[in-house]
Length: 294
Length: 294
Image (cartoon, rainbow over all chains, first blue to last red):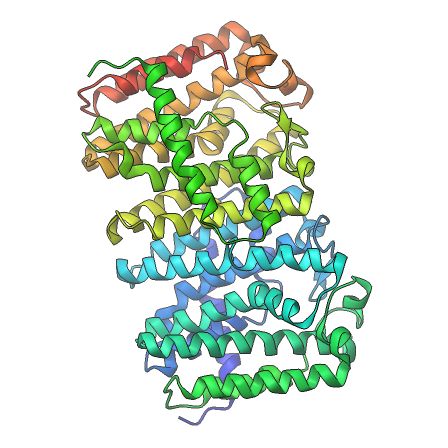
């Protein structure tokens, strides 16, 4: 299979966005709540996690369409986490990707409820997916709730807030990102492969791979905050610095952060070798995320 | 089976609280997050929903113990909803049941995350319950996410906030409470009976019954806010009035609210007759909730 990754990503994005719209229209919620959920779902996300899930499924010969409901559930969870992270009590951000944050566009109460609604509805989506068996549904719900709950993403968010006050060492920064952004990326890749028919041993290798992929994604995020084009990244350069965020460049210097990223790339590719995948899409994704400019 | 309801409730409360503690201790989360979740879980709740679930299960010959994990998941969801409802952007309450609200005891960011964590972990609890079949888990997760999501409790909370600004008629007030408090009470009773082995037809009758039970609970809540003993209800009398809340006494007068409550009691008992239950516990519960003084 010879595929140009940027084209592949664009096609998958469009496929995903079309189905997403149908899922939102189906929700029977008060108009303002629905508007608020929709606003953040459509606020220009790259759909990285859903696309990784589709790619991972295809890597084992599965059909990308078969993961779409689960991918939508995952995007709901990711979107809820952004809405709550942006709240005044948390990161207090007015803009995300160049658009007003949810609580600025609506109000704080609506934003909290839109986040709660997205998170909760993700479990409705998986539990009512007509194409999955009950065994698959339970597996996916367990993994998604663990990845995003108090032992996963929510823990990472709390540790991240604490780190802004106290500062952290490299191993603690890695731990925060493994939880805060890593867990959902791991879920994307592992659950995509699971639906695609991967073995337990392959899932373990992918779990390791995806953990490094999440770190690559985060280091590059931090690097772009220093060196990126504000028009491309959708926020002013240096905003992490102003928010007292712990970042890889702050801990290691810009060159040190780049070296650390290369270390993660090497480890990711090493882990991927044990996942027995015939095509090179996930490997290409690794370089793509490492080198991305937005 | 002859049982004194207050004793029965007390026994079930103790049984539930013991198991709850084990479930919290098992969570591997950052200490502050765990403390915050635990604080609200142990802030003197009556455990109404878990007890109703146990009662409903026993009403069909099931074993009350068999619903405990699901009851704990439900109490997690209920507790999350209280934490988020109390936030400054929502009801802005400093006290609940005579104790500081979560964001006052900790801080707003921690309270938001504790709520998010409780909600998410409820789905981990059900999906990892070793005593349920996959079919049961999927049924329960679907019902719980629908009851608490953007078509259920979250919708009710949004409509409630809007009602504070605009005021509402009786049918709209009923709708708000059917969503905001009713859905979780319905889940408690229907899922308890489901685990206990009730038929689909019986579950439908219970769904109707529980809808009225939720309204009875809410009318009495509103009445107690006017006539109750502040030491017993754990908040100052008249706090709804000060919060511009729409209530049954405000719409119908105190006597009108009492009459409305009796109407719901009659309808609840009528629905219960179609549920084919041999013992009288759920009927006694109806009077108990209607006449409670706290």
